[in-house]
Image (tube, rainbow, N blue to C red):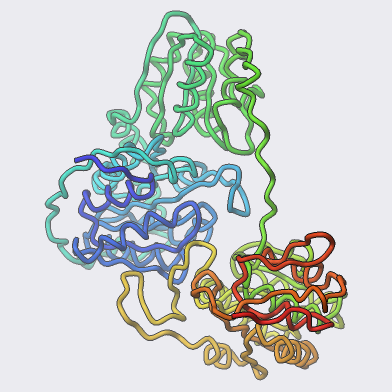
Length: 596
């Protein structure tokens, strides 16, 4: 049976087909839909599925299931793998009983990430096999194969789709769900308790498994070669294979192509055979030269008289996302042919630039405005990862730092040690607070950092698709659960001053912000208002009375709400208004009024 699926959905279907029993995740674009699709199928397929508090917890829960012999999957994006790195590096030594697959979605570009790190490099560091799908069908097939490989090697296996593979759609041929045996359960064994002496022995075992992994990957259909006349060849990895094939078609040339779907460990026999038949080879892959470097080693160790280029030769960029045009230029330059001229009607106008902005009615806008009013321009606002990172955009300009999940509080603590007299506020969301913010708050309280922490509680993990978190009353599969009270947690961490306010109530919000900033010691303000994208459009919207309006521009220049635009020099509120009423509270003439 065929079904039109997004790449991420195809991975979820592959996991079901492979007989996955436990699935865990922390949301992050471009990976989120993998688990979302899997959670939707969980009940009917007997799968336990959870949005975990962070990626470290997600991997450890999945590892526990794999210890007991169950097939388990954990999904995250590339920066999330940093959070899970601690258990992953040791898990490679310990190994697993049931198949354990890590779906780590990379974001070349980057489109929605703090960096472009290449998970294939992480796989090399951890000495774990990695599969790199080029399309949704291959992503589904690789997922099924990854579980088998994991159990055969006794190692976790990484599936590394990139943004285009994650979000492109294709008719995917689905298979029958495997009849996997019941998990045998956890068997007590000294191998599960890592000590330095055991780590040394297991490291020897892990190194031996590299060759076993190479032999398995060598036989998979995800690596293939297409030969043509001539001594020029192209090696393409993952989604870059699609760009290479399309570019060669545009150029109208035929060259040999080696498709690599398992970049580490490299299928050396297939690669060596390909290299021996050519004198010039171009390696096309996104991000780091993972395949290229392995091919360079293979070329050198076998004494091949070969010109091998790619990123090292300056043909393929190491930054950003590849596309057909970039590959087309690289191939034409490498082969020594001219680029085809585009007809005048084929030249497309440049895409319009759209500045990212907080949604109309976003409560974070009101929270930032209130603190800017209370703190003044000299205060430092440390930020975090979430929708609210857009607080750094004009006109709010309310975020001075942003590093990684949970770092707002700890960065603020470090700044306080250098400038103790300066007002410092750390902003983070409710999901981020649970992810890695609690430890930072405990650290600040214990070490007496005189900072203000602002928890932007919009009742959701909003940026990645409104997934639930421990502060909400339902799980990933919709089951009711006890939501944890952020206020109680903050007080249990030892914070003496805690305020909970509605950011739409600007006067109260500004008063709470001022009190917190003036408090001697760590203070926390919880700005609680549901995400505007989750609420129904309110009946009481806003409209500008142009007879009363004096054209001062405060509503536009200070808030930056996309629902307010300027026409003929005066503000006009469009139908994207959600009726939050913040603009009417800052209008000095009362010209913005409620309408039904």
